[in-house]
Image (cartoon, helix red, strand yellow):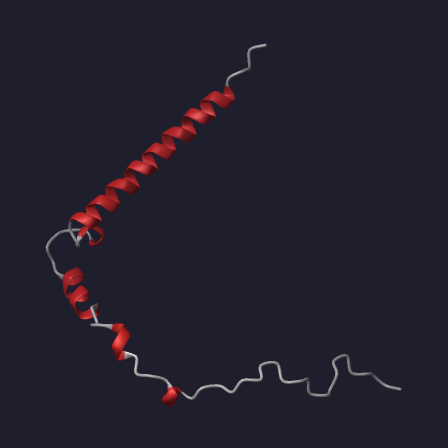
Length: 92
């Protein structure tokens, strides 16, 4: 008898009946991509002005950084308080 094939050798029916679009049929992508900002950002981030890279873009970066630090310190304090409360025996 030999080994029987586990998977059927017959081709299955077509799953998606629609034809695919050729890339040349699609509209040009320049209309919705806008201006390439990468060269401008590279100039900004590679400037040697002594600022760390996470603060180079000014006020929005400072706000994000300080908010992140505040949430980190607040979360650490909350965890320490929760651990302290969990370590205390309960009054009966």
